[in-house]
Length: 213
Ligand code: ADP
Ligand code: MG
Image 1 (cartoon, rainbow, N blue to C red):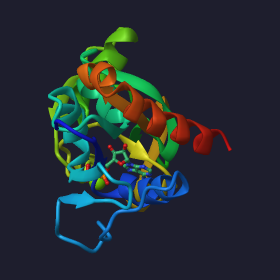
Image 2: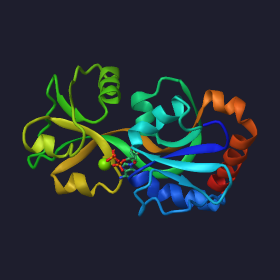
Image 3: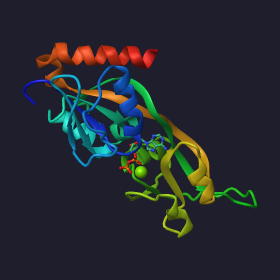
Image 4: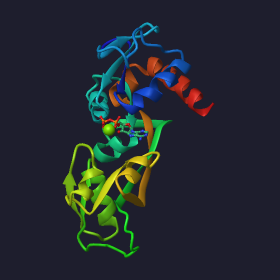
């Protein structure tokens, strides 16, 4: 966008943490995005607007300059990042972790198939993780409800986000490896960073202070 700063936010879990953080730096949307069906929202701050997109789409909007900056999950950045945007700093919100989980075994017997089938929304991360350990995994790409896959025999393991661990537990799964901690990062379009330097660094600086506080 020509003038002002457009911020891409995710629907879902990140949004719940994003709005309070923005409020702390003085940016308040004119309508509540958790209630409104509107996907573009003006804010109290002239020139600053929000676009509400799917979590996996935030890097795409920012990369193409449809948004100047965005709040993107580290999971999404690791899965699809290509260095085409700036990952500025950790916002410390929407914290969880990316883990490998498998069915809990009552007999305690080890179960490590030579070529495990792994169900995940994160095929690239999963492939890299297993390859680095010399394990050739067959990756099954899913878009949700990964926890179901081992129950119905679709996969031996899953790679998924966990926060409390309750969903794993409810489905008889145990965490066997942590791949990485995850949180939302501030990302920026490279060209916008030059062209709208003042406006972006102002928001960036305020966010950084709020995050450190
Ligand atoms: P979707 O179902 O569209 O993938 P989610 O709301 O489940 O959306 O996830 C969006 C983003 O929120 C994820 O990419 C991740 O960065 C973050 N996230 C997901 N699950 C959790 C969680 N349990 N705790 C904190 N953050 C999470
Ligand atoms: Mg989800």
